[in-house]
Length: 124
Image (cartoon, rainbow, N blue to C red; front, side, top):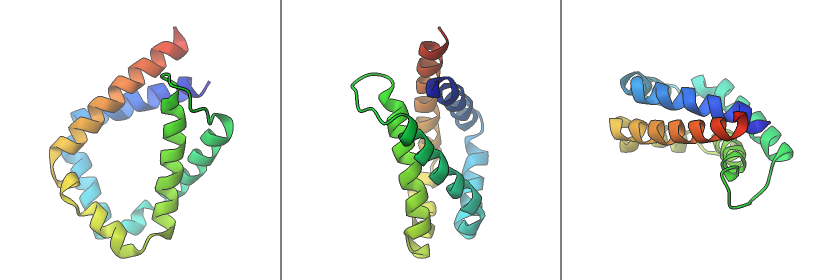
């Protein structure tokens, strides 16, 4: 069931990162100026992460481990945002990895592949 949700979300997010990398860079740049704009996003990440790991927390060596990693990643991202000092968050958002387009293309390609695989396995 979670693959039916996460697969299409990853596919759409991956394609968005690939097609609109410059806009995503600008968004991260705006967040670096005022990271409190991310408050709602990180609250949602915290909740979604907790929901996913409570529904599916299986560390089996198959494609569906992506769901478990997604849940833990979302949870840790939310925890980091709420507990890390403001200077850490700002330094992460201003780091070179976000200023180069390669980062967005890499994650866009990876999310697209995982989205296709999860979606295919969930629906077909």
